[in-house]
View (cartoon, rainbow, N blue to C red):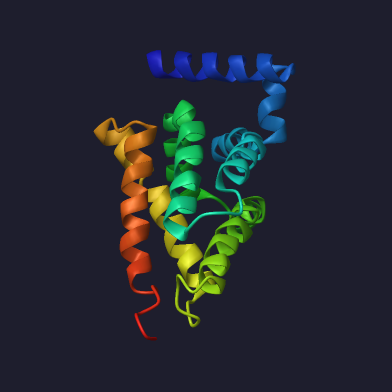
Length: 180
């Protein structure tokens, strides 16, 4: 009974913030997971702007990815539990919801690809670097690092440091070899 009342209160709070009747919340969203997904996606524009501004166009690959991590986690740590719930709920999404998620996350991949392409152009990374695969691996590490915040109490700086170490380890396989 307590959990039901808490859920009802959350629903009323969401409806109040959206300036709609509580009943209309679930006429718009078929599932709680879809509602949660929409709440998280409403914050994406701010996240992308923060990361884009922090990364810039200058500096080495390690420096730029650390700026990416610092900005992203500083923004995301404010709603860490919400993000964790959304990541967990993502396993229950419909194919259409997953397609929507991928579409909405698209802006982050050109940003990461730009960092990696610049590193290839500056000969910091090898010319045969698989940029799309590296973007996918880095993004997977980014998402996985939220667990450190949720379960280990890591703050934004600790999470960013962890991700930076992971990225450095991953990129070591793509670093341009001396004389190569």
